[in-house]
Length: 468
Image 1 (cartoon, one colour):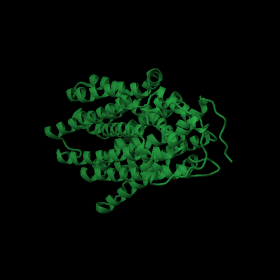
Image 2 (cartoon, helix red, strand yellow):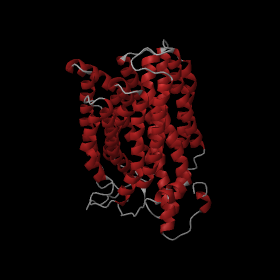
Image 3 (cartoon, helix red, strand yellow):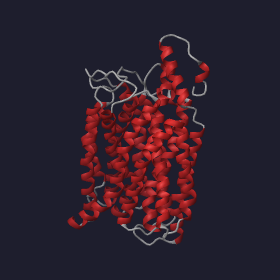
């Protein structure tokens, strides 16, 4: 039996490092999909933008629907290796394989090609769910300390941004090199994806090994489908967290999908310049990690988040629209500021989510991390799916033609989508964070109340009023 190890409030460095490793795999493939897959379908496979957007929406909707189910299954799982870790072991190899298949065009043509990519994207998101939901739920179980959760997610964020740098910048170079070597761009994309798929397997296995015995709550929990309504959607703190995360995710995913079009057709970047821009953006995000961690510890997660996302809103709404194609230095300066917002979404929100699980524990006496991470992932991905579908439709409506010189109207449409469209959703996230009731003081009072409730003693109801 894999018995939980006695733990202090602070996790050892090697455990944090090992836990973060699986995020490398998740982000490596997710970045390829969110940044490059729409472009791959329109410009390499040759799909019309509207259907390419539908393919992305289909996969993301399937991912969203499957998230709560996998969360409930992982909550109810009862194995000698714990509730979450067996999923990591089972999914590692299939996850790498489907990454290769997703970016491989076997020349089926016509409707068969459309069916193939629809099936491939559904399979990709199935394995992504089987990895992400148990993995993120595991992090919520490893510590209950308000600030330690931010620190743990900091390690995740480091691996995430390293993977994002590789996945956003390196594929262009590899595809070009392999295309010259193999005589085909499609073959270049396929071989590149195969390499990335292999690289995604091993970090998952490292996390599986490093987190052995680190689950604080290994007891069997009975969770039903109807608990989705009775639990998360009656948890006031969770609803605020879910709303701000969904809005932020739409903004972040839209940046990933539209930035390629903005740089290529408006800024007139070549493939090397595009790779360098993505490399610069994600490299900057890593530099923000200790700053965000420090500010979150000193002022609180909510306050830190509002500052960084608020700054990004201004840059996106005003700076991006004012930017001219020859203003390269200004473009990179804006990316430095925006990268702080990118990292804040990746780091701060994921540290907020575990706090709402304790609200549910206080109400029910149960630890249901899988349920909550599954539901919040569903809401985020459902929102992103609709956004990706609409982006594909709007690109068609504004007259986008793959690989061609775009009209002035089309370029204006791309700029408006990338600037004002993204800024709108980021602003919604800032508003949600402003009204978020959870903070450090209330979280400490909540943990104390949970313990007093277990001991049959009276707790301070006034201290919990806002979060309940």
